[in-house]
Image (cartoon, rainbow, N blue to C red):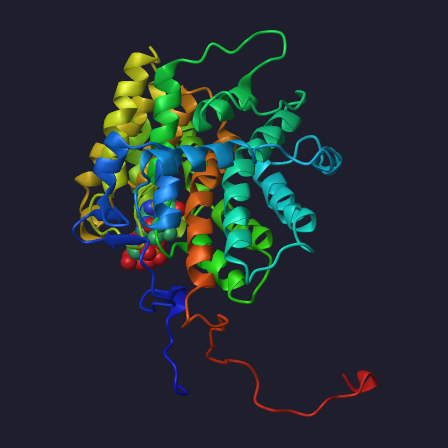
Length: 391
Ligand code: CMC
């Protein structure tokens, strides 16, 4: 109909050109700026990956030190954020608070922001990477009634976040280095994934010339849904509901039954029709973390049985439904003592690196224009207004 294509869910539409992330869903390949995710997972750090995504190249030692210094010195929140945070209901979901808090950043950095100025754009990106963990930790602490902690700037990015989130005022946090390393790796794996729903949202809002903090707040909202970033939380809830390995068979049967409305959370992906390369890395790490932290989690047994059962089931094989990154990340977060409602917030901290990189790329794209999808109209043809007393 008309001169445009009907493409629900944009399965066949490229809305932009991008040089940031490459995915080959059939081969199970993921590259950030050309570097395979496996190599980055093994050798890099989240902050270095954030630099790479933003700038296109791995940093030299001096470039990295400058970047780290800049991020570290933008970690503080404006004190007025506290007043804003304290207005949320005590039991608000941390993702609900994140959407509001990030949206409110636009009010702190708007008037002075000149989007034509490359340095100001870069600074907005740095502020977001730096402050999102501070805000995330504050949202969590508020939700459990703990006092907010300031970032300790003598620590590195991921360790600093864990301290902010988990340290109790009376006791210094004894952080297991395995925990910090595992979280950093999860941040690397989640840092970008080309035009996923939240990044596309950031770009759509960005295409209107909106404030970058507002763009990222919109990205957080998109990430929250269980079909996207909310899946890691949903996976854990599902594993808890399944409860015991002997219940796995009936869970798989239910997921195959379309009438049930139940899907196996953490399975399937719009782009990967092969094993998600991130899931491969995470799967290995999952066992390692549980071993090294001495965690013996019965849910892991349920997860492993579910994985095996689904991978050999005709329904899942035919539809190429493999475990995705979120299938394992929830189990690791749980082993690290991160509460379930914070799982998607973790994803948001990592994906901020991708969101700001895409926003920066879009701002200098000479072909960029306002995003404005079309529709196939299915409503009434023209008709006449009926007066109220005639209806
Ligand atoms: N369990 C059972 N059946 C499924 C599942 C599942 N997890 N995923 C897809 N299917 C079926 C679906 O019913 C359909 O069957 P049929 O062809 O008979 O109608 C077929 O597989 C294709 O599914 P689709 O919904 O058309 O695929 P999509 O590309 O639109 O959706 C997805 C991708 C990730 C939203 C979906 O697989 C899903 O809902 N998975 C569970 C949620 C999840 O784990 N999401 C995290 C995605 S990875 C992290 C991220 O990027 O945010």
